[in-house]
Length: 204
View 1 (tube, helix red, strand yellow):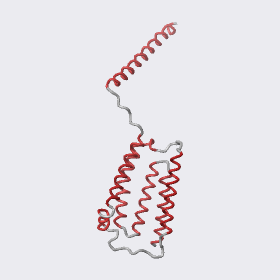
View 2: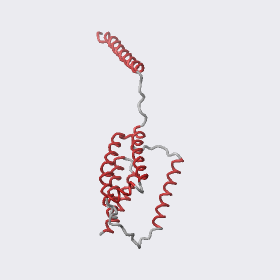
View 3: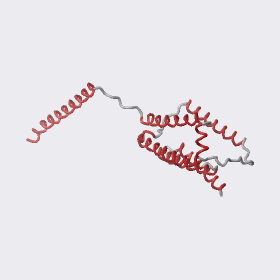
View 4: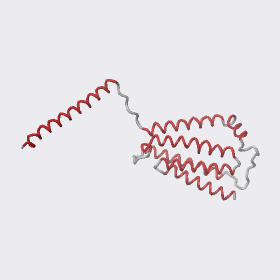
């Protein structure tokens, strides 16, 4: 039964990950990310990492995804990717990054001995073991990831919202109000003159 759950969760994780990067609608991408997080939490349960799986669902699939949805709703249609032209250096960087990811996956799979399962300690995946790992061996990496996530959220709002409107001074506001008033008066005079010109024709 465990092997069936593993392959099903792995398949859903791959499909949802592809949906995140292939959809133009940001809401659909967010739903794909939600499915990916749940699939990864299932894989963590198979590794006896109950605490990490629960944190994955509660923190990321819950709180973080709600924040992402608020950001997407705030950005609106401006956050959707338009039919812009790709720059050559962006294509080169994307190809290099993809090749690095594929190389890493191939090396990990090639050097892994699937015939000899590793022994897992009873405390593995529990709150105590995870907390001790976070504050000792992985303290710098944990804090670095939190800063990167915060920067990504701020950058998504700033880049997606576009340029901010320029603030006008009091003199500029008064000048624009005067221009608007002058246009209204000119339109009123034109309407009055048109009505006066139409009066002799109506009398005849």
